[in-house]
Image (cartoon, rainbow, N blue to C red; front, top):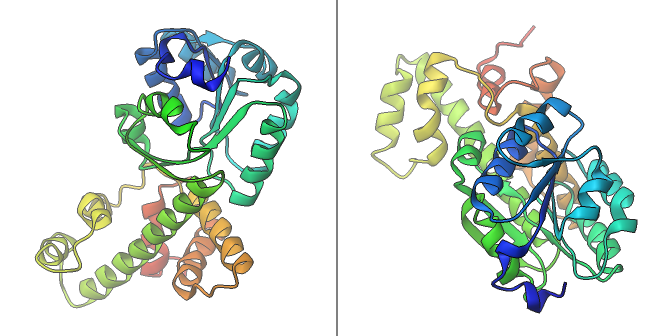
Length: 300
């Protein structure tokens, strides 16, 4: 099935989704609800596969079964090594005309390597990492950054819009990931600044609520503080986006900075906070729980 024939015919595409974790579960469910053809799914967690089968997805026993049946293969797995292993496994079953969309957050260099593997089979590849967290995945309002050939973007954009309301092509393969890592690094640096200044203000008797209200009056207002101050005040660390995931992203940023010979002291300072949280064993908690490290909870 050639790209030109697939344009405007998304209802005739059979979609496969591999990786039903915190984000992938809801992303796949939105596709199932909105797509007019079969959606195949697989995950190492068989309970998740059964859950998606319960809302209409076609359960598969393995990744190869997904690859054989789907015209469009979407993946959402944790790390670079998982993406590379997955596409190595299914590569023999990726035929000319198929489309692969990896929505994982991984090293751009690894994604480009996988793109070359897939394109070598006459298929197409896009990296399309997401921003925002679980509530947006449930609502289908994620932000999505695509890195792909220009002619591919109008074909996959309607599919990506099953999962997100803001979809943008950032350039060729790997560029969606470059933007995702820059985005998350900026979030981590803003978060670190929020954590530091809140804790300083508290030492002088300013409540978190008053701090957030006062900041909203000036140039320091930011999305993170507006959305998280109530959780910080309540010390609610329920996970929507984990410390270990942001720690991974900052690690990727560190490698990118080294590759491009660019110093990023703000990123390195934020990463030290995440390093401390990982060492303290709270990697599964929400990333706002870095507040505890900045507050000094782990000081000897």
